[in-house]
Amino acid sequence: MARLEAALRPKGLQIFDARSGDPAAKVPDAKGNLTLLCSQYDPKDEAKAFARGVETEGMESFAILGLGLAYHVEALFEAASPEALLFIFEPNVGLAKAVLEARDLSTLLANPRIHLVVGDLAEVFDRQDPHIVPLFMGYRFVKHEVSLRLAPQAFSDIQKAIVELMEYGETALLTAMTISYLTKQNLCMNLPEYAFSPGVSALKDSWKGRPAVVIAAGPSLGKQLPLLKEVKGRAALICVGTALKPCLKAGVVPDLAATLDYSKLSAKYLEGIENAEVPLVVDPKGNWQAIESYPGPKYFTQNPFLDALLDHQAGRDRGSLDTGGTVANLCYSLASLLGADPVIFVGLDLAYTHHTTHLPGTAIHEQWMPELNRFSTLHLKEWEQLARIRSRLRPVPAQGGGDLLTDEQMFTYLQKFQKDWRKAPHRVIDATEGGSLKEGAEAMPLAEALRRFASAGGTPLPHPDRPAPEALRPGLRSSLDRRLSEITTVLGIYDDTLKRLKRIERRFEDVDYRTRQLKGIEEERKAIARYRLMNELVADLAQGDEFARLKRDKDIAARQMKGEERMRAQLTRDLDYLAGLRRSAQVLQHMLGIARERLEAWPEKSPWTDPAPAEGQEDAHVLAVPGGPTR
Image (cartoon, rainbow, N blue to C red; front, side, top):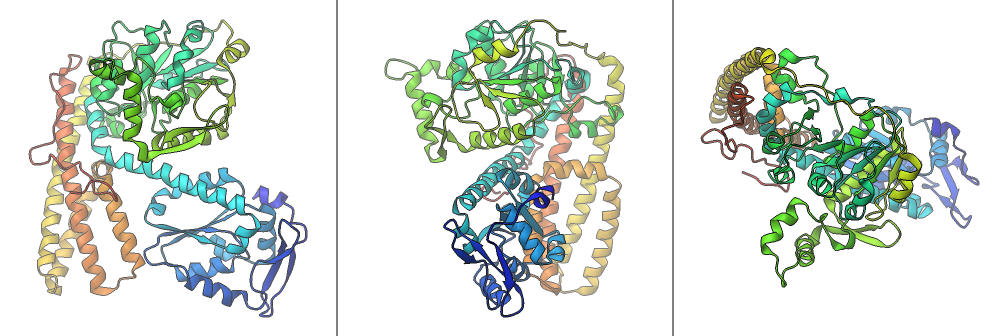
């Protein structure tokens, strides 16, 4: 709003009455020629014809490029589904101000379906981020051609930014859904150590105003390791778990390392480390074998799922960190928690520098070692790796000029970092000396960054003691026993409701019978409401089913179903959704049982291997998501 108030109207803009009596406008183009923003005869009639040419069937969101005088926005708002969202993008702040002064759009803009985004590309990401899920339900670009002719490059950049946002959001959302089972499994397996370990809140502001170096595992890190050996005590060294072994091998001992990878491969990154002095900062969703096997001290980040299970510890503030989907984001958030300034990045290539995928000495290279010979070198293995993913590669501007190849996942990480850096209260320096060009971070050679900012002195980072297990175990045991009792009850309610829904499906035409069964379902709904927390935990595990239900609801609303057609569609939706919840509840029941056994065995090492779902539930975690696996 402040930006709009301060903006100046475009020079040469003319507002006048069209023949219909509605406001019209002329705007000078780049050559100074006046261009009509809308019809000078009947702008509303022109807008209706525009809206009729837009395919609205099944579209949940529209990205409208160009505000114009907003007649086309009003017409599309009326033509689209009552549930559809409209995002209007206008880079010319002065023009937007003039339009809002010329026309009273207060009612339209007050509607929650309308989102006006005025200004630069940062606004595109920030304003659309909360609406990622609705956009995935189906969105379409709608172009106001006059606006595009007035600012072709600006709108080209906006369209590209929207597509990139979709790629970033889709990766994040689908990753969250498809790994939901694995992360909940890891959480339950990590539950005892989570309860018995200190939180990252103990580190807050312990390095305030002093530099930190975030050590990522990109190919460029190799050339930086000799310099990092001299940094101990002058800057906090925060290392991703992937790079910990190469760092220790090179004589670089980080102050903190971090892990959040849910997959088994992360155990390889920490395998073979003995008598570790480096505290490990852990996201409890991380792979349980990796976390359990690490011999050094650990700090855990807060996790709402585990806190809900362990309600006797409610109010214990372990501290939270932003993961951003990658452990390098976690390390950056950790540097911010420490109060570090500046934050210096090394090894953050986010691209395939020199056509290599990994820092030498990481776990993937160790896996390749048995296959290496004079005909199969590390360089060739790297090329084979890139060839396998070539369909997902894309060029990005390189640090120092030219282009580099990156993939979709690293590209989304780049967008996340740049978004965070724009809001950072501290200085951010990219001392990678390679990789992709990163906006929002100041490029600087590592030697210069260390010379300017890394001075000796200061209090070392704290290493608090772990709480005594026996003091906490009774409360933990009581909490888990209560949750196991609740999940058993909830499963019984799910079963009863499913039986009633199936009876309604078989005798749908019998209105009296249907009414009686619906009354019974209403009673079961009241019963499940008494177990709100457990129902929420189940729904959290069943994210794919939640997404499918939301899509069904949107489809029913968009098609404006009425009467029995609507009731049949809702019945099918509820049958599928409840069946999914039941499967997830059975899996959660099994996981909680294992967590309970691990709690009793702690601190002995777990005698179990990978925990399997309960019998008959091997595929319960497979999610039905668009473009993903279906079952």
